[in-house]
Amino acid sequence: MSDDSSRRTTRQPVSLNEDTIKASPPPVAILPARSSRSPVTSPARITTSRPGKPSQPSDPTPGHPSDPKNKHQNRNAPTAGSSTLRMNLATLIYGLSIGWLSPNLVLMASDDTPLTTGKITSEQQGTIGSIGTIGCMLAPLVCGWVAEIAGRKSALMMIGVTQLISWAVMPFATNLNVIYASRIFGGFAGGGTLSIVPLFVSEISEDRIRGTLGTMLAILCNSGILLGFIISHYINCWAVTYLALLMCVVYSLGCCFLPESPQYLFVKKKKEKAIKALRFYRGEEAESETSQFTAEVARFKDIHTAGNPKKKESNQIHIKDFLTRSRWKPILICVVVILFQAGSGSIPLMTYTATIFQESHSNLSPAMSSIVVAALQLIGSYVSTVTVEKAGRRVLLLISTLGCAVCTTTMGTYTFLQEMQVDVGCFRWVPVASMSALVFINAIGIGIVPFIIMTEILDPKIRGPIVTFCLLEFSGVAFLVVRYFPVAVEQLGMYACMWFFSCCCVASATFVLTCMPETKGKSFEQISESLNGSGGKKSASHKDVAPTPV
Image 1 (tube, rainbow, N blue to C red):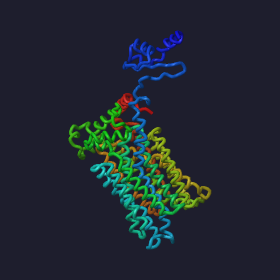
Image 2 (image 1 turned 30 degrees about the vertical axis):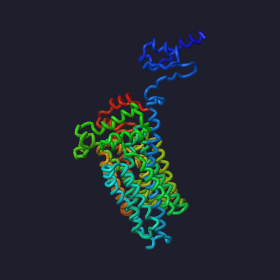
Image 3 (image 1 turned 90 degrees about the vertical axis):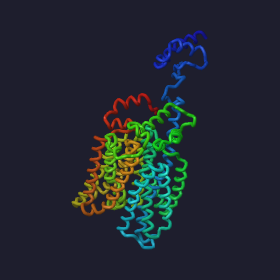
Image 4 (image 1 turned 60 degrees about the horizontal axis):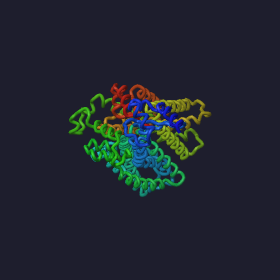
């Protein structure tokens, strides 16, 4: 017994970490810890060790996973994740509408068309395909206004009602006018989804998981597209309609029980409701008051009151709010990135996928080709989800834009040689391979990351209006590109269009490399500091004070 006691006494000072030695005098750190099993009342952190076992802190340091103050961080991911999944059911439904369109256009153009007016012409096909963007252009204006006046949750509920109307009329669609109306409502719901869901997700998620949750939009949308293709091919086109109606009901019920965005409630000076909502999205207990939760509440309040004392009294948006350097630079980045996204070529190429595969004389049928492309797009979205918080936003955008430039250049060169009547018979696989690679690479970065960045770098006060404007810009450019792509191919040639898209991708990569900051794992304050050229040391010190556990 004496030998063992002596052995433990001599080993004890070795097991003390530096923090313990600094925080407590030697007599308190050694004698009470070994003389009794009673709880230690000293504020010092005392570390004990036994032979063969690593030392364990009796009072975990802040940031340690076993610290009760940080358990809410471990609960945050599933709480915020399940809420994000509920919101993104709207994205899944929008994906179903995209997957429904392609096979139904083929059906309505065939002799077996369900329309009483007979099979549709190629011009009517183009109208059906592009008319949804009209609703998509209106959605950011209407949904953005509702989100600012009535709240983000109200905008989500309005999207659900619009989707329900869009799908409810489809079983009774026997003429083109009903289909046109359905597509406009569906486009409105899609535009509202792309504008409100990323905004809501960015406002409820922590910095460390914000990017991962943001990419769920692409995963659910591409899952809906793939599901629509598969059901239409193996069952029938109308089965998609009934599935979408069921999903609309589930989505609306799920959103009913979501609290409002905490940031929005802080803006509206509803502090008690804001704190209650933040507890829900952070997985906090009702009576919990952790230091990190309190700090986050204070940070939300500072975001909406710092800089101008009058903001505490009024949250009205004025023109001057958009003209300060700290705000117009992020606005410019958002506008340019969204413009380059629409000009990357993925939208028209996805719209005319079947035509491209047919021209390449592929052995796959148009339906199977669509399924393959949708599957690759979904895989790319998953890769983006896994890597967005590891590689960062800028890296994914650079890889994606440069990869899309290579793919469009390859397709343009192939069609140019074909136009020059060069024998390319042994390279007929090039369009299929290039198209598949383009869809995959696009989904990794340029297809979704701009929507994440858009909600990260904008000041919360002007975020709603600017997101609305950017989505309006995206819808307008997408409409023009999709509507006039066939005309440009006929007048200029496919190769000219492909090379134009390639130039847009190179310009986008250059802009990202020179002008865009990395936002991975950063708070809004840190992002603002990096944009204004004052972020380096201050951001680093901020991280040292409040480390984020993995």
